[in-house]
Structures are given as structure tokens and as C-alpha cells.
Picture 1 (cartoon, rainbow, N blue to C red):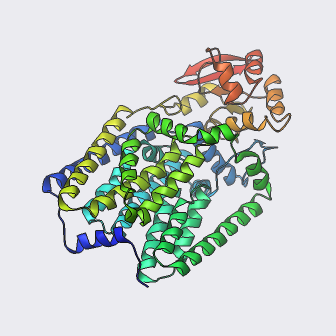
Picture 2: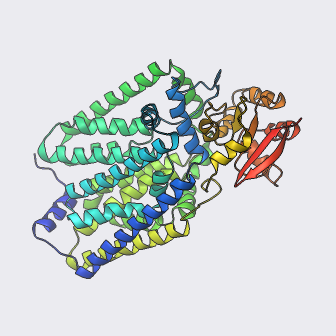
Amino acid sequence: MHMVNTATSAAGAAQDSPVHSGRGARFALSVAAALLVTITIVRTEIWWKSDAGISFASGVMITMAADLTKATFYRPLFGPVGYGGTRYFPLYFSLQALLIKLGMPVLASAYLLSAAAIVLLLWGTFRLLRELGAERWLAASAAVMLLASSSVQMALTTPQADGLAAALNIWGLVIAARSAQNRRSIFPAALLFTLAWSAKVTTVFGLAAAIVWLTLAGHKRLAWRLALQTAYGYAVVAALMMLASRGRVLEIFRACVSGGTNLQFLIAAPVRMESMALYTDPILLPVAGLALLGLLSWNRLRGLPGLLLITTLAITIFIFGSPGTAQNHLLDVQVAAVILLATWVAAAAPLRKQLGVCALALLTLAGGFLLVRHLRTWSRWYHPHQFQQVIAAVGAGHRPILAENPIIPVLAGQQPYVLDPWMVQLLRTHLPGFQQPLLERLRRQEFGAVVLTTGAISEKGAQEWFDNNSFGPGFVEALQEHYTLSQVIARDWIYLPKP
């Protein structure tokens, strides 16, 4: 049965009978891409050397890898090790744990994994665009254009699972597109979609887009096989997580997965997503806006790029209905939007193609300019750190370190008592007494030091911050009563027990 995909066919026809964009437009896009790669290399070196991307969220992911090296897979919400609670799925931190076991340093292993994920994402985007009919130069430039997004840059410099999940998702689409054309087995695509889900639980939009696309293209049997094989893969991953955690993962996700959302947050999700993009990833707005214009064509609406953008937007908006959602979730929207733009340009008539290539070049340059503005720092969560200086200032005592960013005790060779401070304040709202062991330890001065990274405890508004975002009510009072500010290193505030 012949696959019906007008957008792909048009792009293929354009490639069979070459429609060359103007040399000037092509040269401009190539120069913009080269500049963006240079900026990315410089920025990455700066951020890796200063650990600017090791926010508390990255610290949580790295701590889970460190826990796994000590045979703790998903620590309980509260137990002998301390506080747990997370919404992260296991593939990323399991791979990092393996690298640590092989002898790599903690931070180096995280950076290597993140870099490999972004390389796979760019390569996968290139291959998918080639499958959809884009010329080699256009596919390569569009793949590099992903680096114009700060969310992609964050995935490179801030160790989390977003880049890995996105890369596996795109490679799943590459295999699905090939399977539809060559009637080959769909199982590799199902495996990749399963791995993407095991890296990040919300990464299901690629699978959804592929199933709908295959169905509309007349490959219903292939679509059913993809759906059933991936569902089987999901079940295997879930069973392995249950087995390896001895059932803890079910309790953990039941308590943490909603993130404390409610109907008001869900209704405001589109506005929150737009505001987050405007503040943290402004290049996404024009890129996604232009891509949405491409959906005005029914043929593009039925094509794989259009369906990918629709499913990605729908699921991402839903994700932003949770209070804990940050800019990292914008990454997949950027990827889907760039893929649609590139296929749109590839299939355009000569004059429109030149204009499209010029637009891609301008967007790439604009993204690079915005990145230069944040070459060294971004916000209070993303800034240069001096972790070793902090550890040295704390001293070599045997008592545990309580840190807002759990990476500090990890680098000091300890297992952090609190995995995620944000989850402590969230879970105490529906688990009575959940916070009390932490407060009692503070009152008994059982921590050798407390390290906070959001600012001085005496600053105006600090009490509200810790009550509603980190550790929860009562933390500030217990800290001030039994600990004293000893030293400030960069943005890390070190508290030591009072005599």
C-alpha cells in the first residue's frame, strides 16, 4: 500500500528535481550555524568549568546516580538514608551510575552523558529531516539551529534527562519513518520510544505522532504493532522499576507525580508555558509561531512533522499544569518546531525557499546573540559554583551536611539526607509529620553544616521562600535558633552549629 504523505512527497520531488535556494541565503544560514556552534563550544566550556548548570534539580538527578552506586534504587520517601521523593524516571541516572562505577568522576560523568545526548539529538534530527526529504545542507543547518534554544543549551550544560529522552524520541521517529517506507520491522522504533519513556515519563509525543501518522498514511497494521510493542516495553520498564525498588517506586510516584497541581494550575498552563518561554527561552516564541503557521496547510497537518508539533505542544501544555515545571520541558517544543520549519522550507517553491532559508538564518543568529548575553550565568539557579571551596569551608567532620543542593554532600563523599528540598515541603502538605524528623535533627544540631544556595536567610522574603518552596514551614526558625551564618562563598550560605 502506498503511503500518503503529501509534505514528504513534495519534499522528495523537490530533491529529485533540485530546487536550489539562492547562494546568498544558503551561505548566510551556513555562517549562522557555524557561529552558533562556536558560541556553544565557548559557553559549554565556561559552564562546565564553573559548574554553573549544577542547579538543585541536577543535584537531585546526580544524587540518584550516587545512591544507585551504593545499591539504593529510588530511596523511600523517608527511611534510614533520609528523605526521598522524585518524579524522575531511571534511564539517565542509571547510565550515570554505570559511568561512576567504571571510574569516572561524578560531575565529569554527568557532563559526558549530557553531551552525548545532545550529539545524538542533533544527529537524529539531521537523519529525520533527510528521511522527510530535506537536502543535506538544510538538514544539517536545521539540526544545528536547535542549539539556538536555551533549553537545548541547558540540556547540554545542566545534567538532566531531557536531552537523552529527546534524542531517543527523535531516533524512534527516524526508524518509524524508515519502517513505513521499506516495510521493515517496527520493533527498533518501539524500543527507542520505550527507552525515551524510561528516561522521562512525559516523552510520549513522538510515539503518539508516529501512530497517528502511520494510521493516516494507510499503515494501520504497522501503527498497531508499534503501539502494542511500545506498550509492552512500557510494562517491562515499569516491572523492572518495581522489582529493583522493591515496590517503593509505586508509593513514591503516587505521592510525587502530580507535583501539587490543581484545577487552577491546569487552566493557567498555556499562560505559564508562554511566560516561561518569554523569560527563559525567547527564541522559541518566533520559531514555534512560524511553525504553527505551517499547520494552516491540511497536508502539513497530516504529515509527521505537523503531528509531532501538535502532540508535543498538547503534552507540554499539560506538563506546565504542574507547579514544579521549569524551562527544560520547552526543549521538545523547540525540536518539533524546527523540524516542521525545515520540512516546510525544503518543500517550498524557489523564491519562498530563499525567504525561508533567510528566516532560518536570522532565527539562528538571534538565538546565538541571546546566548552570548547569558554566556556565564542565567539566574540564581544557574550561576558559577565553588563546590570544593564550600566543602573545604565546611570542614572534614564526620557529621552529615544538609544542603539545598544535594550535590554538595555527594561531592563530599556523603549520601545526602534530603534528596529534594522542594519535595519535602510538598509532601508535608498531605503526609502529616513528614517534615518533623528533619526539624528535630536541626534542633539537635546533628548536621555538621547547613548550606543554602537561594540567598541569605535574613533577606526579606526568605521565610516565605523556604515555607513554600524549599524544606517547608519551621525550617527557618529551627535553623536560626541552632545554627549561625559562618561564611558566604559566591551564592552559597554556610551555617555551622551554635556553641
